[in-house]
Length: 142
Length: 90
Image (cartoon, each protein chain N blue to C red):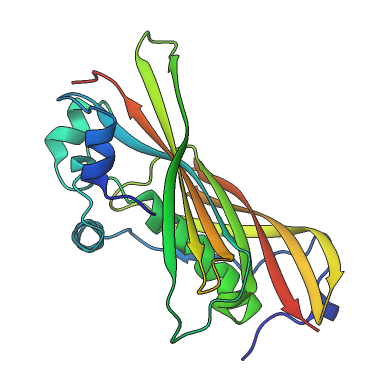
C-alpha cells in the first residue's frame, strides 16, 4: 500500500489532483444503465434542451464526485482511508468537458495509529466553472 | 445512493417537464466494513422543502438518509443525499 505519509501532511498540503479529459458520452450512458438511472438529462438531448440545461448530455453527479474520491484514494493509498466525503453540486459537467479535481488540507488531527486530515475538495470544469465544492476526512496511517 | 431514480421520481410526483437534479451528498464511514459480512440498510426521508427561484420556478428538495448497519445493528456508514426537482421547465 502506498500513499501520503503523515509526516508530509500539514495544513495547506495540496492533494495530487487529477484531470479527466473529455467526459465520454458512452461512459455517461453506461453509468445510467449500471445505476438504472432513468433521468433523461444523461442520455436524451431533447430533455436536456427542454430543461434549459444546455445541449450536451450531463454527467452523473456521482461520477464527477468519484473523480474526487479517486484522487483522495490515490493520495491516501487506500479506499478505506476516506472516512467521510461531503459534496455540493453547483454546476453540471457535460459530455466532452475536461474536469480538474483537487483539494487542500485544512486541518490535521492526531488519532489512533495516524492522523485524520480534513480537506477541502473541488471539481472544476476547464472553463473555470466549479461543479463540486466539498469536504473530506482522510485517515493517514502513521 | 440509496434510492432508485424511478422510485424517487414517483415519490416526488414528478410530472412531464420536471427535471431531477442532484443537489448534494454526504458519505460517512463510521465503522469497519469487513468483507464476508452481512449488512443491512435502512432508509428514511429526513427533510423535504420547497422554494421559489428568482425566475419564478419552483425547486422542491428531498433529503434521503441511508444507513448501513452491521450484524450487531451498529451503524457502519451513512449516505445523505439531497435531490432537487425543478418543476415545470418544459
